[in-house]
Length: 365
Image (cartoon, rainbow, N blue to C red):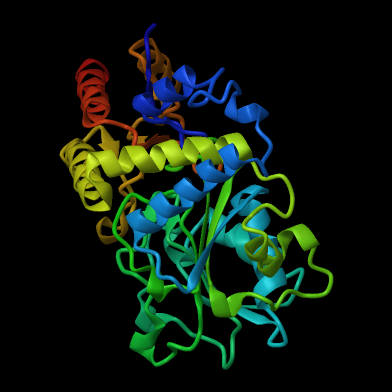
């Protein structure tokens, strides 16, 4: 069996160790005689899987006791509606910091349920940077401030953690879409009211959405919020008000255990820094390729780049595929190329990409 280097932005590469363990346990999970896919979500076997997954996640992120971990469905896109339905309350105004395609989509969805104030935007720079907090223009009494701390399409990552206490607004909860970089770097969960993300980047297979929400933000859902999306209901029922995405939770749990074996968040962050440096250093030293993102705000997870001669794009992709380097085409909205180098991408994969980039430039430049 041959494995390619998969640079997909999501669904993305998973650790090989995890895939092999899942394969070994496919027909019989730990002597139960059942696949995890066949288990009742209310049976003791699956409950033990879910409880262990939550415990390991709490350990990895040092999640405080006054935060609830919810395993939900609908993807991060559904959370764009679920969050205002739960958090707007009587204020009916939310502030959004817009730094790319995903936060643009998020604020548009929120407008269906209340008023949106654009507190800051990097539109003028074609979404290649993050506005500093000193430039955020918050409304008088927002229900929350929304951020997308890593924009998967544009390759823009917050170089700081939003801490509204620094601007005298510590009473306003920060909501963060961390879909594409959660578990890739150390974060202070206590700086956020709510963190969420789709699983298909750094956590597991598509179909699972992770929500980490502070206790005081529960119980404020609008009357027309669907019951299955009411954070209080989901929390009170331990994410099992309805049948959760059981197999995705199981795989996520294996990924959490893999991260712990790797040395936890500090160890994986050091590896991610090294991978990103390897790729960005090469791109910066080349006159054949370019990255257009503000260097201070470059994503460690999603690296967009462009060939100076766009006429070579199709040739580049075809030759990359032949070399076992897949899913390098940039998002259709921005073009060019993109390499997503999530936790499960080893440095050997990034080195293989750099070697190909160098060879292609030498032959085609």
